Length: 247
Length: 101
Image 1 (cartoon, rainbow over the protein chains, first blue to last red):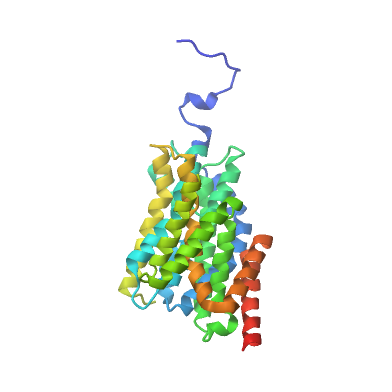
Image 2: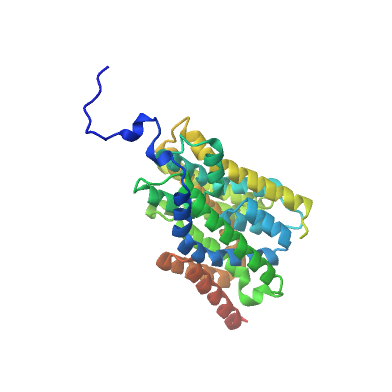
């Protein structure tokens, strides 16, 4: 067996079979927490809005906090609010959540390719992943370009974002309980405006026009004759089908 | 702090599905590779689903909502800010209500 010539000291980390990024350090947790504070502050408002809207939709304080604490995914929670009714459509809401949050799989794949999740214990990997969100993912991916990141950074950044989200939702829900005529303040439209802002954040270019138009047309048509909420599924699948055909 | 049974069931469903998806990427990455084509298609799910929620509500809301949507979409494109988009959209709808009333 011949070894390739190396500079002295190069590749020291490989000797143990552990990649450098595989470490899980308190310093990285703190780093992630500090870096995400500005993002968390700008996200406070969304939590407040969700809380107020949850109040107008009739969710109790307990239900609102249970959802925000265990799901902790703003977009899916807003869509669930839209589908919420006196008799809650459990299957439809769960399925809609699956479709909206499917992107988390791709984000996890990207993390696994760039970060050294592999040498870590399952508890550390899948514990940190509870805090995977659009924001914590973006921060961790950006950090990982400098080659220092690992699941610890994700945990720190995710924890700060999680705690601010739940706290902001709590304040919004309790305040929202005192809003008696939400339409007067245009709150009926606030919900739609937030969703429009979220849609815009997914815009990647003119290629999106065809699938998005198809989704809107199918959803409007479907809403005229399909049972409640099924038009959402029809619209989303039509949009993805159009995107697939154009590939 | 009350919670209805069907509400708890829906929240549990959402929570389990979401945590599964959060773990799924790393789990899959260790076993198979996701093709770029599949990735591009999956990327279309969140925006097309959101549009499917919004579109029928806007159509049912009439002129007021249609104008509000246009203003909100323009603001979102220019500012990339949820706060600005909401402020512009809500202000438009409230103003139109007083004018149209």
